Image (spheres, rainbow, N blue to C red):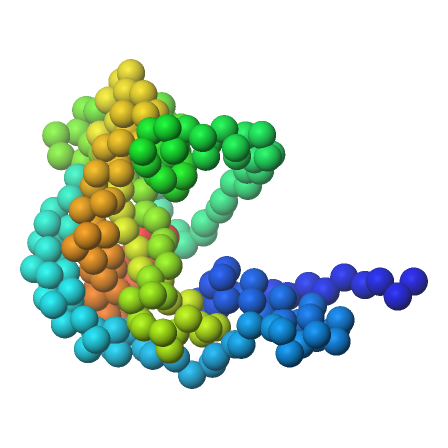
Length: 232
């Protein structure tokens, strides 16, 4: 009779999964009377501007690589929409049981790639039959998938206990030809993502958001809607 359920709702712009896990653990420990053992939650953390000042050469490298990122983006296939300014979105929920997850983890270790790269390759293979029209395109003939990554360590020790999400993004792209296997596709993605990580090119996503913020006030309402539909 004393049991109850505690639900916590949050937006991913406010907090990330790792920080929410610490927050929920702290709440649970407080109910148990062991709050002294809870991990601290820090609200005042460095901003992305602090990150750029902390790693100026990373930022310079990311800026130099922006033309290449833009060029690769122009090779990504886009499904035709009935209305380009339609901002409606949707998602599909898929649950993996422990046996399936263990099989994916084992495959990723055997192939020398990450679990995330195996999942990205699997998603590309699932999308490939739905985008056969791309094979007829002279330029936009690749499938591109964005992935969010946690860059909290880049901000330094002061950010490790922060509630705020500290993330970047990267994009994996591949033409996904007929007959390509999951291992070959995951390995190709691994090589490209390793290049992005080595060069800290995931900072390009943050820089692009900063540029978009400067241009946003000058865009008409219709162009804003089209931008949202294309990228989200």
